[in-house]
Amino acid sequence: MRRLLRTLAASAFACLLLPLSAGPSSATTTSVQASPIGMTSGFYTDPSSGPASWAAANPGDGRAAAIRDNIASRPMARWFGAWSGDIGAAVGSYVGAADAVDKLPVLIAYNIPGRDACGGHSGGGAGTPAAYQTWISAFASAIGSRPALVVIEPDSLGDFSCLSQAQIAERNGMLRGALAQFRDRAPNTWTYLDAGNPAWIGAATMAQHLDGAGARDAHGFSLNISNYFTTGENTAYGNAISSALSSSYGYTKPYVVDTSRNGNGSNGQWCNPGGRRIGAVSQTGGGGGAEMLLWLKTPGESDGNCGVGGGSAAGQFLPEVAYKMIYGY
Image 1 (tube, rainbow, N blue to C red):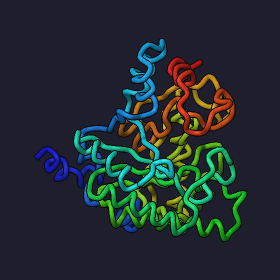
Image 2 (cartoon, rainbow, N blue to C red):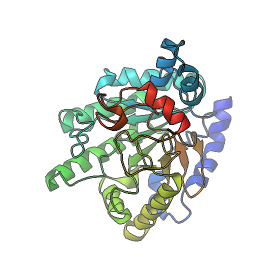
Image 3 (cartoon, one colour):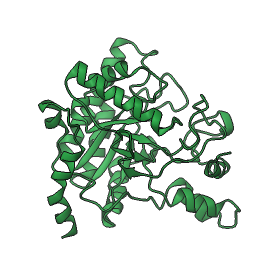
């Protein structure tokens, strides 16, 4: 009954989240059967996250309590890629666990061919576009009608400098195809294309990239994933992108900001810089124009073999980095 009551109220909630300036085409492509936020009672906290697993396995470590209380106990996204094994089983288990406790899971799909082609620290992805289509279809099907938020392929639209026009067109085709899979197979999922961060490329160019990747069919876009820029810097950038989408393409989209590591802002470095701090916890709204503030990157997870994470692999949980990030040093 609780789910039913939330669903009945969800369409009104979703309307409140739509940009007031959006034209008819935006309203049509943004709509879903129900708001996943209205269908649930808050964000899901993953009991098997890297920080949670480490704290449970190391109860005698002097850092464990702080990491458990300040990071592991917070709702954050889970990333899915080739390491997830059977993607349908992995996603289905995770979304099912969240659904069982009436919470909203946040998932990140990170398996596009040529992933991080220009940066190189997180390279990989599905071997071919056809393999990716199969993978993302199984991902969406595993969610089904259950509520979820899904960010699709961080970094995929941020840097085209090392890609040919043919490769850009191929990538856009895969992203449009991914959006279609969620539209058709996961009607109560809100999808977000990733739009990088304020220091990467200009808002007008990012709006062009988003539109080329099919942003009309996404619920919105995401900002600052795995980066450190302040929420204010991101909302200014997000509002500029939304304005560019409106002026150039006739529609707007809401956006979310990754606040997991932006408590001290950026020092100009992106790969495991020291002195960073956890930011505002996951929440709807957040001021400045963001639809939601979310922990999308797990605090303490390495960006790669660089900075204070020297000798580590991208995605590896580093307890010392996590501990220092709690206090900002």
